[in-house]
Image (tube, rainbow, N blue to C red; front, side):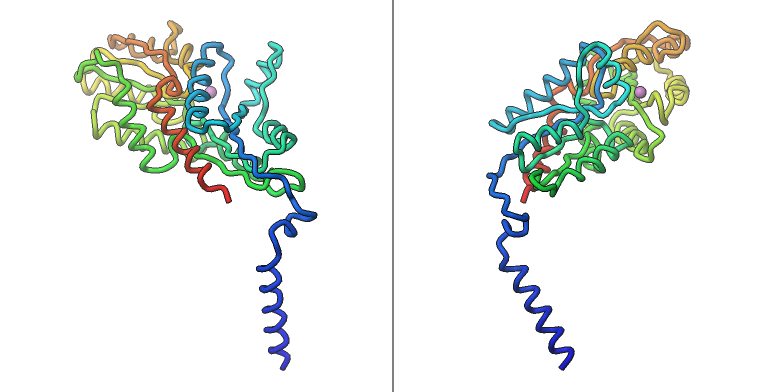
Length: 295
Ligand code: CO
């Protein structure tokens, strides 16, 4: 008898939950029409030339999602501070979402323009989800993955790198890409990328400034393969401070100087990945996946 009452109560509960209109679940009825928006999240850059990368992404996103408003935000606190000193205000993802909340957006797809799901991505991911389900706020916040987030992405990125290498490069010449690198476990993506590239073309190498593999290891590999000339390319969305200083400058500890000291001729290509439509397509595909999953 007692069990029977419990079963009846459970049945009633399920029934009430199922037939309650969704508007009742949203408190006093969220009658606002669905308004979808896009928030792009980049690391940021202090270099004016980086604007080319950002504009390239924005144009592609707007073309893919006509009529959808696109907002920008940045995760690097250092860059935000530096730009503030120059009188330029860059929004954080949290500020971007707060603004979109005020503008009555109900559904926002947040697209990470990072290269790997490292510390910047995970920090952002954690915070932006807190914006979903607030009273008078956003109903849904979905996040699009960075450039490399699956094995398929790594393979696609490797193929894309091969496509964008300057045509004049000969097979026996090397290509050295400078990734950022991180202490975060996601640093393994660079090693995975290196693996794919090496299988397709053993004279292409990816190293990092702040992680592993390091330039010392790549230098040893280049010498082992008796490579006399390399193309130096950044593997970062923007050819910013790292590309210009740590990779290409005449300073003693730049990658260019380190390799030239070994008698390896360097041809510098100062172009960020976001300047190539082939890479931008990968980010946009990730955004499309997020955008298609709104409920
Ligand atoms: Co850095």
